[in-house]
Amino acid sequence: MNIALSGYGKMGKEIEAIALQRGHTIVLKTGRANAASITAEDFRKADVVIEFSTPDTVTANIRKCLEAQVPVVVGTTGWYDTFETIAEECLQKDGALFHATNFSLGVNLFMKVNSYLAELMNKYDSYDVEMEEIHHIHKLDKPSGTAITLARQVIEHIDRKKNWSISDRHPETLFIKDLREGEVPGTHIIKYTSEIDDIEIMHKAHNRKGFALGAVIAAEYIIGKKGIFTMQDLMTS
Image 1: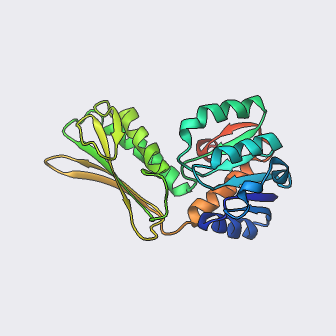
Image 2: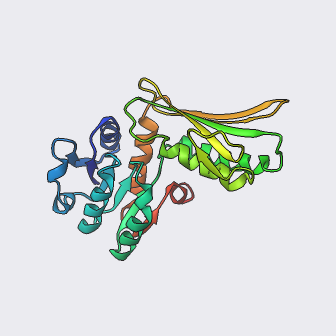
């Protein structure tokens, strides 16, 4: 499989290493030096594009992939306010888009646990719930896309929580403590607290390999498909 890497930072390099280990070929790498000059025609060299650039450039890159009729796997976060528009364009152009706020298989299992625990805790209003997420100092979006996904799961099931915030501790708000420290690849904690006890679940990434492997597996999955896909589709296939 010929892969184009849109975004060749630390994640891009991890993805490259795993893709090569799995027998794939990297035919294009885009980064700060050449990103502005890359066109849809350049992406046509690839069977699939794996997009891990920046929140400012991701939508333009996705549109180039759709124009080129090349499937795109998007791991960049911080762009979901434009998701509905991009999704509509993808369907109109009969394209293929695989998106996730986190490609780690472990994180996606953790999300299932989070959703189930929130459903159980809904009727126990003596417990309050908060979140904490820790990432490396280079991460641009706060909170992380993964933290937002986890927060939405909690809000979906906990009737007493109406929204999330990184600054407001109102009783109806799910507070997210977002920290940026060193080179931490990603830690997410959901904690339920009462006067009697605490219940806590945590996912702690040791490195970026889990995210990179999931992205490559997603790229393998999307080949030959049309439409919009998520990790839920991959994990249930």
